[in-house]
Image (cartoon, rainbow, N blue to C red):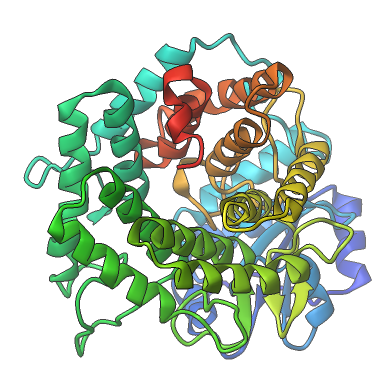
Length: 464
């Protein structure tokens, strides 16, 4: 049976790629990872993937434990990591979620590489951004989110799981528009947590209720954090007893992710790796819970975690690291790392008497804008380039990271609420990504929130 012709990391492989003007398909894996073994069995063994890699790329396979220098440089925080590089070693795109759509994606990247003469070809949206009416853009995004409602439960779902982002957008949209129908969307989506958590066949997004023998009490940190923030906002608006109970359980599950050294575990059993964006989300969630539950101790724990996270993550000339391992910054900066950390610092600033956190948040925003701003107005993250339509970690076509851009626009509004130039820059970012957001379902929710933050009636949502 044909297999992918993997080569070792060696100069000869890159010289071959240069001679043939092909991109390098780099696989970073570890011997101990079940996901890596499964990828070889289920994905790389496919005849279409074998043919696509042979026809279009030079394939290189690296054990990240044996070559930590390469793992540190290119790893995206999870194994396997699959990246496309230029023959000179620059990242084109990549991801960590591998499935049976890989073959056409490989061919698509190769076509873009060839068309761009060795550079990542920009999507048409990047070359020319049409004028976008704010209200019309927001309306289209709202319609796309509402279209994801489950006919039976009324909840906004993705793959059968209720979306925290959609629930948060629905809360904000209902608040700004005084639309009871959107309040019902939020309530139904939050209410679906009970049903999902009680069904062992469905992957639970959060900790709701006690752990069961056949399902873990805590899932991924960012999901736990996003739902904690959503419930904190819901309880702030309407302290329904069931929502209060949900919030209390969510906070309990969130705190279960804390490590003794103050960092956060990104998933159960992770003892060494810290993901900066997920940890920043956890700090934001705990601060939101502290405020609505009147629990200053939660805020203290969040600030203690930020005191550990921020200097470690930002102690590198390249910007904010994506991964911390044994206290050391590793991996590239992703757009979400910078925006989430800056938001967390601003959230924590309200609990401090000095302006240190605000100053650092402003520095993070300016650094990120300087490094990643594209003439279209949007921020591009070539390594991450995977967050559009919520496909974080999926090898994808060139596009804008939706959530990271939306958070950047909201940061500009939070930091400079009276600055017309900052508002114009935030609006330009949103104009560049609104078309994609309107086709992204629940994953367009952060962009909708950001549009609300720019509107005068929606100033209350700028920090949501």
